[in-house]
Amino acid sequence: MPALLTVHEDRPIYMDHDQLFKQLIGTFFEEFISLFFPEIHQQLDFSSLKPLADEVFTDLIHGERRQADMVMEATWKEQDTLLIIHVESQSYPQENFDERMFQYFSLLYTKYRKPILPIALFTYDAIRDEPDVFEMTFPFHHVLTFQFLKVELKKHNWRTFLTSDNPIAAALLSKMGYKQTERIQVKKEFLRMLARMELNPAKMELIFGFFESYMSLNQTEEEILMESLRESKDESLEEFVKKLPNSWRDKGLREGREAGKIEGKIEGKIEGKIEGKIEGKTEALAAVAIRLITKFVAPLPDEMEKKLNEQEIETLELVIDHIDNFKNIDEVREYLK
Image (tube, rainbow, N blue to C red; front, top):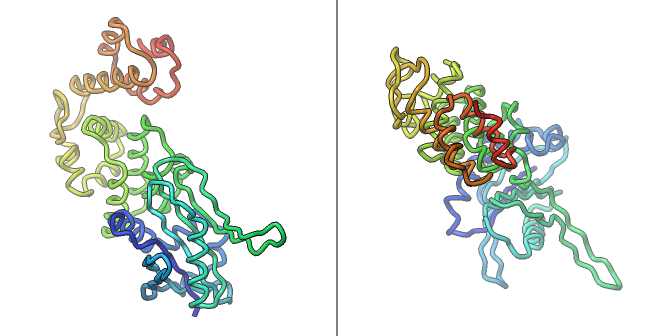
């Protein structure tokens, strides 16, 4: 029988983390292959895709137990092909990872005796160059070169995937390469992507829960995001956000767009329709802008801080969105009215 396998090490300390990726990729396996390996996707017959029982392997020398996390059957262009995917969810350097991938390959080939295409998914929070080759060689003879495919999430720019309707792309925005100052924008675009996909409630909750697990905005960031969503005047997006889990509704859109005017700083619950300038939001945006400028550009003179507090919402949002572009205080001053 043709088969696809996903293998990862049995490490209880990372069970929750590993389980998130296992559930995500297991549910959207075809979408995962399509997103990162489109040429492989064209060659796979996904109508034959089905999960198999877990495979467990024991390393008698080191006493380690390894489990095939996700085993699936599929047909590869009229050939019986065994495809191995290693979901690696650790956030620290793994010694001899290339050798371990070869070990997984060898164990699975011994069992199934079919062609194998190994793929490793790196989910680290830092950018590193992971090896994708294991070699065994001597000065007098080259024994083997084993090479596997790899996906290093942090090396992918999140903006590249904004037009995608792939659920995997939406979920993994939270693990891709973005700047800390882009967090609000990443989440806003994630919500747009999720709303576009019109997934069933179970799949939508899975994608949303995964994203929330790796990107959780603080209160100020969420307030800014909520305001931005309302001011976009995209009623369909607002309606969609209202259907998200309670952790979101409680923080901003549960009451929807009722008639009225919000006064004061938003503290998690929207009680009316925004009409005109909101004093509370202006103060919140000014505070965020001041913190970001101080942290990423330079300390603010008193007169600049005063001037920021006098700016309109649109100007403050512009300053926050372009914080990465400022090289000095004078450049910030040019944005102010």
